[in-house]
Length: 207
Image 1 (tube, rainbow, N blue to C red):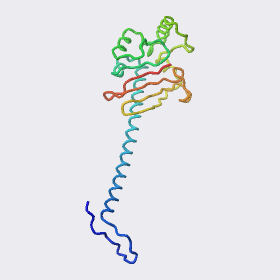
Image 2: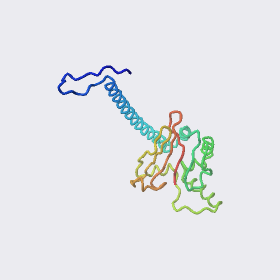
Image 3: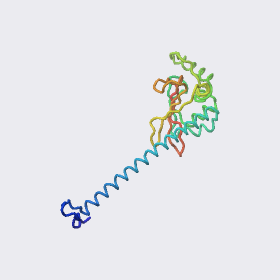
Image 4: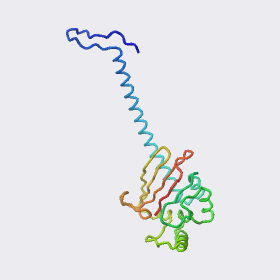
């Protein structure tokens, strides 16, 4: 931009500093950048809020399907990258399973099926494998996720670590504060990944 002759104040007695077209243009540019930055922050906050609401909605849908024991719908919400099961139980037999392996467990009513839906087979299979491997007995008896949810004093969802593609949801099962909640007794942790417009299960922490 080429600067023109400065524009002087009409009050020559005050001998005010001239305002150049350049300085005026720079001021306008700076204000424009400021407004643009503020607009971006507003959009970023709105997107973050939407992501949190969508993540919570995805977790609510997943929990509802467990309570309804809708295996077909649940399988559609398992991450294509596989799902990891984090806990002290010996069931499932592997720490991470593909959607296909989880489907087989559902069909055979073993492993992940027991973890999700059946306390009886969850305990039986864990005891068998624990005995085979000379594992230590559990202090707290295992319970399926469905049973934990059905007997919960509350089901409060708290979202954490939300990014564009990943998020964590803790389901608080009692009135205990989140930082004092104990897995299986007071809380369950679900980790989701956004795939094809759906929040799909990536990890579970259950005890």
